[in-house]
Amino acid sequence: MNIPSVLPAQSDIAAQTRQKAKLADAAHEFEASLLQELLKPMQSGKNSWGGEGDGEDGGEDNSFDTIRSFGTEAVAKAISKGGGFGIAKQVVAQVEREHRQNSQNGTPKS
Image (cartoon, rainbow, N blue to C red; front, top):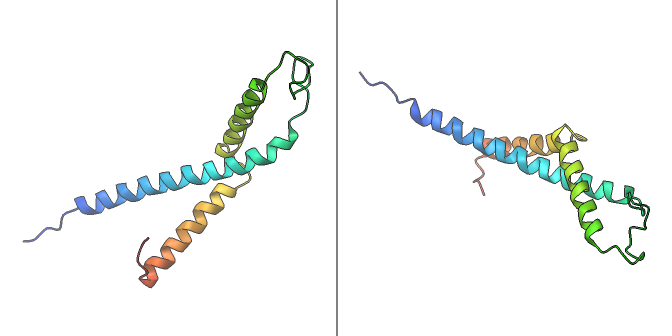
């Protein structure tokens, strides 16, 4: 009696799960990058201490711009992880659709 092994199928499932997780992470990073670019123009020229954000008031350097950039990045990532505009979902769906088509057509994986 020959009993087929179940382990290869389980390892394939685990590999597919890891690939889907990596794809979802990459899609969210992509969406967050787009959102960050959309949020940049919304930054005002004044900082919270009442000075201009361009560093011309004598006491301020570019550190405020760096902090503001980190803040914008964090907000963009949070928006994307929370669902964002659905760009990440569309990217994942499109990549999976193309992967299925390539698998059915016998196109080699790149």
